[in-house]
Image 1 (cartoon, rainbow, N blue to C red):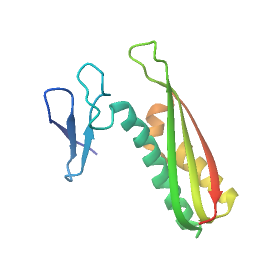
Image 2 (cartoon, rainbow, N blue to C red):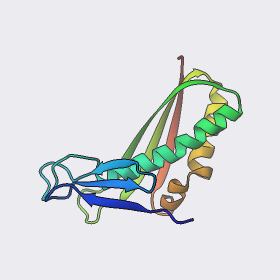
Image 3 (cartoon, rainbow, N blue to C red):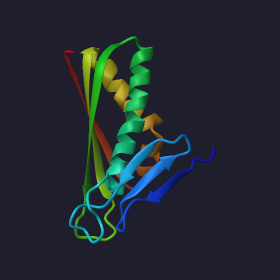
Length: 142
């Protein structure tokens, strides 16, 4: 299975628009104050966090639906830790925090998140040989 994303330059710096084969778009840029960045989009390293969080939560939602859990909402916060004194500066660790809202059994939510992060997430699978990936789960009323 081949996947393609095109990057189109939007300014004279490093502001790009990523476009999927289906036409979905995301803006990518460097931080304001960096050599060429203006902060007009997510950085590539922020996109890595979004990718591992998104990939994991897709599976979590699917698993909880199959278990007939009454999920009203899910919020995911992904935090990465990098060494600012090295270049390149890959993530040393990533933590995915799931907040699940609704009538959801905590043990089922914990198992769904464990499977979503550790077993089914393709992005996490690519990263886990060099990055420690952890997660936490909180179930809250809707």
